[in-house]
Length: 79
Image (cartoon, rainbow, N blue to C red; front, side, top):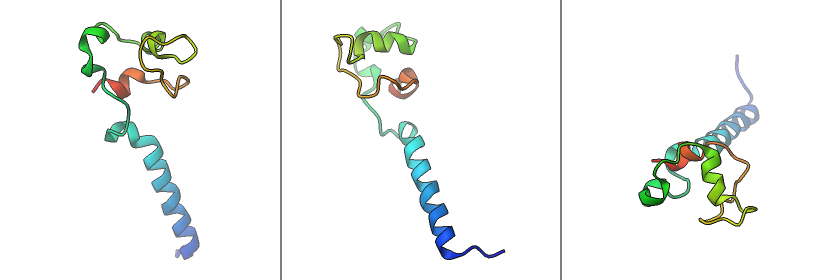
């Protein structure tokens, strides 16, 4: 079975886009680590705790997050 070049090219571009979009956090292309400020972040273990201080609509005490609707704060910022 031989795929046309256009189809193959579209598939490769789509796969690259998905890889880049969903792997950024795992490759290190994300915000600062919580470990830069261990005194402030000690004991933080849930996303809602992150958003208590970093949600842009709640007068943030820390730098406001540009993505308050995302989940996985700890997963991406605790490296």
